[in-house]
Image 1 (cartoon, protein in one colour):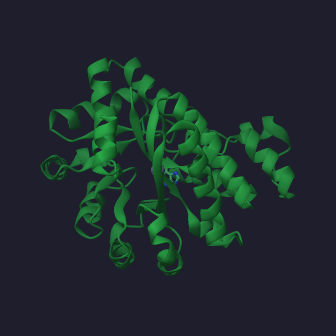
Image 2 (cartoon, helix red, strand yellow):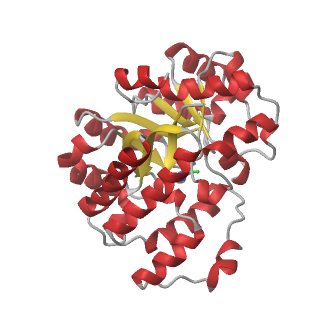
Length: 316
Ligand code: ES4
Ligand code: ZN
């Protein structure tokens, strides 16, 4: 089944083995001794407890080669799962705070993407993601830095700790990114309320909503998503591991479908949540979604991607 991955954080594909290899290669000290001790950290109560580990491990990424290798390892797995197009988040503010150069990070990721396109035929690109629990000024200066690379980016996104960091904080940043010609998406309604989904649409002009699970709490917001053709990039294994739901059967996917909301299936941070995109589709098959429904999610992923129309026709 040809599919697109629309919600994937490249730093969330950093497998613990690779993290330890890179720590050694780069002389970065981590607080854990060996793989078993590191692996014991992968139990999460909520989004924040995951983010703590995710940001800590990002410190091992130091060189353009690291970013290239990370990208290639992801694309190899994505190819095995039938991904033909991938729109990939990265968190420049964290790398800048770690002392890295913006263009160096971009160069490594783009080299990986170019090799992946040649090797696996996967199209796609990068989405600059704003880390919403850092100061707004940090987001502003990151976007300024990105301006001269707008042609090498497909969009801007909004991620990290959601509650207490509403989309409204980033209205200006998104306006600037839009003026740079970037597509706009935002994480909303993962742990935050349906009103954050409304803010993402009204103030950030988001073209897709990442997660969006809590939109279901508002009939008005759900109806609006359907009416305006705004797709949700749902990440089932992420939602379970971060305890957004206790059981995958509690995900409101079927209710979204019944109300005409376009759902896509994605992996978010597969190295942390127990599986890549194929495992996320499989998890939905395991709770009773049929082959035709899964094919519908895959079709939605291509339709709601930012690929050129000609590429979409090729993939559909
Ligand atoms: C994230 Cl699962 C999730 N939610 C919000 N921000 C993120 N960044 C990386 N993974
Ligand atoms: Zn995410």
